[in-house]
Image (tube, rainbow, N blue to C red; front, side, top):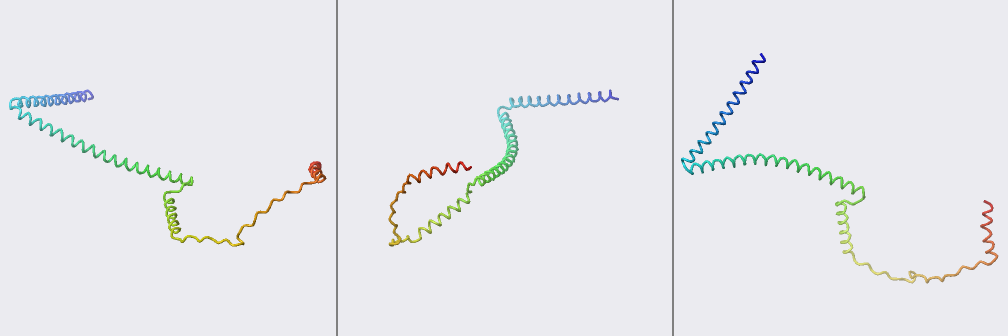
Length: 171
């Protein structure tokens, strides 16, 4: 039984090979026939065949190009979405790190700029301050003369020197 199956498989393989060889021969012969006819009928037919070949080539390139551009477009959209997510994540982490370092945000700086502009406008609109008049009480007192310390007399100096030594003996 196994022997019969092997024989049938071998016969099937030979039939397939024979069909492929026969088909290849027919294609070759058709090409030779077209070439012979082109030589007989002149360059007009040959030019038509070239145009047909060019048209077929352009069509296949267009179909392949459309398919490739569609794939490229999908990949581009996916990559763009990924880059957008990465960029947003990076911005959030940088902002968090800057807050931790005490660096003011863009919004905080804008708020400070607005407040500063408002203060400048209010200051510019306010009347200039009047100079204050000095009264007799407001005048500064004359500087007091420095008085030298009285020098210690000899017996006081001796007593001052003895006190630290006496304190050191009691400890």
